[in-house]
Image (tube, rainbow, N blue to C red; front, side, top):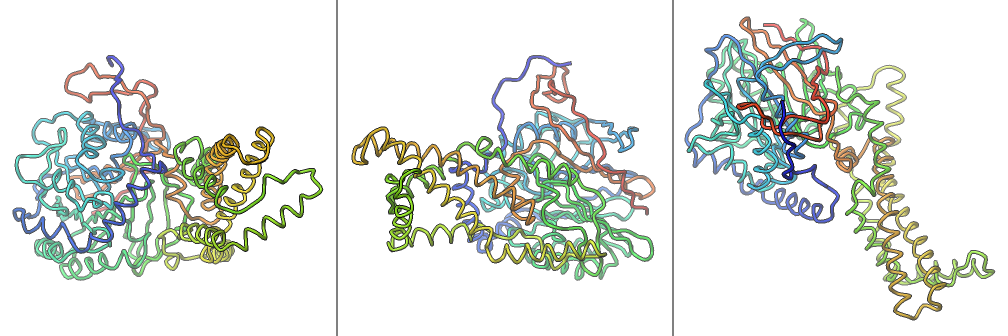
Amino acid sequence: MSGSQETSPKPEMVRWYDPLQLLKTGIQVITAQALGSRADARIMLAALSQKQGVFDYSDRQELWIDFVADLGDGWNSTYAVAYLLAQEKLRVKRPHGEEIETRRGDICVMGGDEVYPTASREEYERRLIAPYEAAFPWSSPPHPHLFAIPGNHDWYDGLVSFTRLFCQKTPPRWIGGWQLPQTRSYFALKLPHGWWLLGVDIQLEADIDALQLEYFQTVALQMKPGDRAILCTPKPDWIYGIKAAANLEYFERKILKPRGAHIVLRLSGDIHHYRRHEHEAEDGSKTHLIIAGGGGAFLHPTHGPNVDRIRYGQACFRPVAEFPDRKASRRLSWRNLGFPFLNCKFGLLPGITYTLLNWIMPHRLFEFEVTARNAWPVVIGSLRELLSKPSAIAWLLLILGLFALFTRSDEVTESRIIHVGIRGRIREIWRKVCRMLWRCRIAGIVHALAHLLAALLLAWIANRMSVRLWGFPTSLCYLLTTSALTFAGGWLVGSFVMGMYLLLSLNIFGQHANEAFSALRIEDYKNFLRLHLDSKGQLTIYAIGIEKVPRKWACNSHAGGSRYVPIDRELTPRLIEEPIVISP
């Protein structure tokens, strides 16, 4: 039963295309990339903290583990996931309708990017701690434990805020009813029945530092032949390619295999949807690669870069399940047609740029009448003047260069993709053509030309309207009117051109998946994993999805439970696919 509706402000989804946010994020990324490898916080943390050993849970007969990644964005999506994680018992519908009862995890693992847009004490408090404490205010012994590995957004302040929250030994640290026992940004959990869970910190450059390798070498000494491991990383190296995978392959080959242990399950986030790849060996054993980055951040599409068959190590993996499905993902991408309204402040950039181009570029558009006999000479004269002025040519080259640089390729390594069958070969040829056009920056050049054409047309309209209002272009009123009309047109049309570019780039070329969907800030289609290790050593994985996230919450009148309950729609979790069973 609920009480009064909560009216205090809660953080909304990050507006990635606000000019100020773009500037802040760009500065953080550049700074982190430039200084991250030269001031590695993991080394300093290991030197200053107490020695961290293995966290041993092997004395339990069974164990429940929750895995959530890419949280700490908008309140509605983050709290909805936290609310379900906090429930002592959670019933979820299977794909065919019947229900399964699951239990709150004895352990909760946060798999990276615990806060958006960039790490700071204030953002962790608003976007992570507040919703999780509200969802699970307290717990009775034995308290569930929470472990976390940092993602790239956690690293943007050099891991300072992450370390302060997750890695201090004293005083005892909590997030709501979850206790935080780790002292480093990586950890090893010894589970019952010969299972292990390893959380690896790969920093920003997919690097595993020497002290971390030394820690896991010590951990490996406790492993026995036949032990099985769950490897948690903040980025799915099977998607991002050879460079990202190099250190993890070394980790598996040099540390785990000599002890006779092997990895049967890899868990990761960073990509904000659910996808599972599977490989079945000749002996019938299966290895699973799961991306579950649906803890609260904006949704990523599932119809972007091609990952239908990927080569990882010596094996071929195929996708088994996705959430949302590709049909729904493609449908959602069309929301980019509403880019000007979804990202209102972004219009400042094209508005100002179009206005500057109107005054910087040499032209005589104010003389151009559609019905005038001298229309063609005016157009030719304007183009000749435009291409003969060094300043104008410099501006044109700068604009074309900037848009060409923006036309970058997504990080998926195409060399890992395997094509099979006639349809696969046809798709391969089509994708090769698209990749060739993309790498030639054709899309970027067309994007730039579209903006230049839009700016030209808007400048002509603004100049003609001002001439009709104020006469020959010499008065201050003329200048102000022309600038205001160009700015307003640039705000709307420039944003629309941007939205069209993102839509076509994703749906035709399979590129700009991150940029296209971050613009939409979709709160729905969230997910997390619930793992059950039973008394026989069998691991069952429940991939839990939420199609629609509530937007309105009310204070909960029941003491001891979550502080807020949904009031505008029922929060209905369901299994994305049938439970995944890994037999002992």
